[in-house]
Image (cartoon, rainbow, N blue to C red; front, top):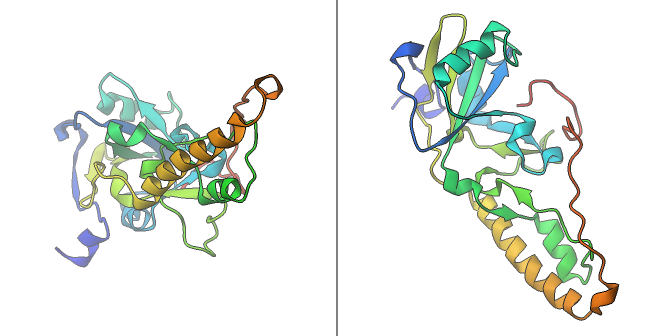
Length: 226
């Protein structure tokens, strides 16, 4: 395998009508005017940004493709009739089993271990098994999680009506960071349960789930979140 292929170079671009969409996956799409087949490999290498302001909701960056012919959906996306933000559409494909669990960060668990358990509880993070952290010092380290490039299935070229496939795509296996967050939540709930069980029932406040504000994108706002 050459160096470009190892970096996720799409390489294999075919007419959209010749593409058979995979089954058994949850498929998400993201319109873009910034990423094209020519630089898709660099996005695959870097990973795709999902803002922490969405508490793990992919809808802050992607649209879930539900039913129907995804090929026609892609054409609609670039035609200007459906959420058009550019002539290209990035596709992510994820094993549904990876989206069942929730988690919390190391900081939330550390606070509980240090004796602080918020009686209102924490808001668990969705989709943790598909996220990684950006390195310390990275410009998005505080405001976003990284969706590893191997989850990016392809990019649709709406100008030429073709799809370019990511040679390094693998949406079947979760991340080590996600597994850690899942285990963090289990441990947090055990600590919180023991703490709150010692509080008289009448004095326990009802849990409140904080929902993210629509359009919250973390430290910076970018219509093309990647």
